Image (cartoon, rainbow, N blue to C red; front, side, top):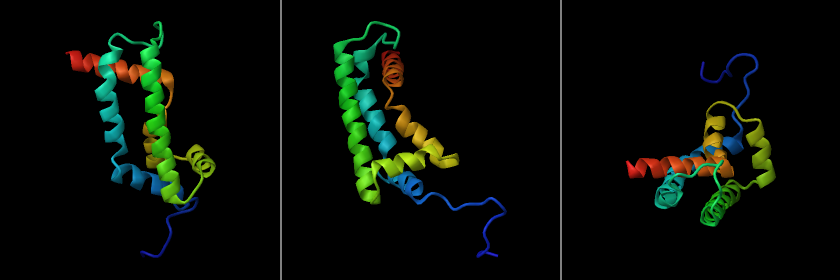
Length: 126
């Protein structure tokens, strides 16, 4: 029967996170981040979080952070929620929601950013 809910313990999907997944796909957020990484990777050949850091890397990271922050703010406004509500929902995420959040939020860490850039630089030089 279509009107029945799934078994015990079932809860409806978080509407904020469901909106996030839909927004992520419609706005092609992954593609936008990939384009940024691809366009700046050449500056990160041989980079590693363990090597001496370049001021240029920090500047590119700050540009990336601004892009990330703009995208997050855009989602929050479109969803009619707050950053705090989004982050509260994100902490309880699982399944598909968690996967999308991992993609989105992992890029925000500096060390992860450096590793992504170095990997892309290596691919481009091959």
